[in-house]
Image (tube, rainbow, N blue to C red; front, side):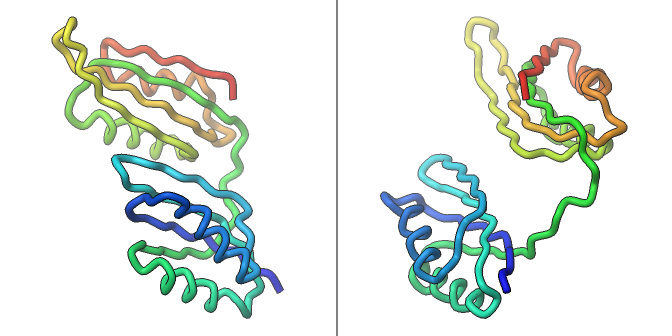
Length: 169
């Protein structure tokens, strides 16, 4: 019988590290159904949905942790999403930066029960303006009762000087 779980791996990125992780997984009979990798300043975080025979799961986890002792592994059971989601939405949000902006944006998303698939936030000093500009790129899935127009109207409350661009999903 096959079992699925999510593993998160984090540590210092080294050449061929991800390929080595995949090779060990394959050798143990596991497959990565989907994965996402984020790299930042020489560090990385990878999340994988792994499928393996139930009787080989413990051995796989032990092998990964022993062969890659410098990395941190976190495991979670895989659970199907229970909230019915109807609309995918990708958007870019730009505005003047302020303290607490990311927190406030995430509060709006949580209040609307929006699922965040991907979020990247940047702060850039614009010397010619003498200001710091905040930019966020989001990939979201909206519940059935939330429209893109409602989401935008809520996000527009974050700043007087805000630009929100909806990209094709």
